[in-house]
Length: 314
Image 1 (cartoon, rainbow, N blue to C red):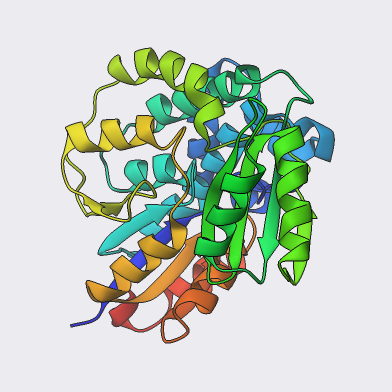
Image 2 (image 1 turned 135 degrees about the vertical axis):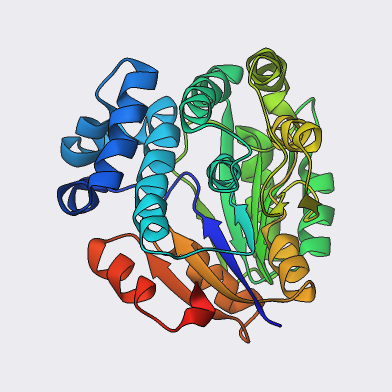
């Protein structure tokens, strides 16, 4: 029997005005924003609905904002009878997936990713780190390039394995610059410097991981109601202690998104719905596993369209 997976986006999917239509249409979505605002003691919802790109780009705001909008859409789906057999999330989206799987309370998740964003931002002084997407080279070639570019006390390494021929690297700015030059020389189809404020998912995030460990240790976790596939190694998380451990490991580990999708498909997931702002994951899933049926839910019309489909989606 084919299974349905729900996947949640990470940082980079945000946009001004996100979530407003959900809150206007659905009481359960409004409740998610109210709970997130109360948990942080700030009007996160107002930043989502009315903030500009600069406000939403601050990492400590971006992360709880994307999580809240995703859960607002998920709450509307759940109210209409939609369910899933498995869940996953890209980077911070893993927190969202754990809330959807009832392993983590919404309020704890919002506070945790707010702290996570601040810790990650503060781990490396601004301007010292960088990230870039390398398109058209396979993982092994990018790993070789990173090894060659890491020298003089500077490192660069793969940070996001987003799909075949699509690898993001992160590290010291000088090493990233060397890696991108080597990638062009090696025949990369395209090299894109990313407009980020820190080099995420690489060993330079170790100071953030140490600080986050204290936050996560104080949060109660429950065994997930459905398996949550972690981006650390693509495996299914089924117990509370592993859920907490993987959230800590993912701070410095590369995002193994291709491995997540392939594992979910191998374990029977034939349909995936991306829930939250943007459509990045829909595109990645189509590229990794074109046989999978994909859908996106981020606006009220999409909630109602998906919830009204055949029972196989519920």
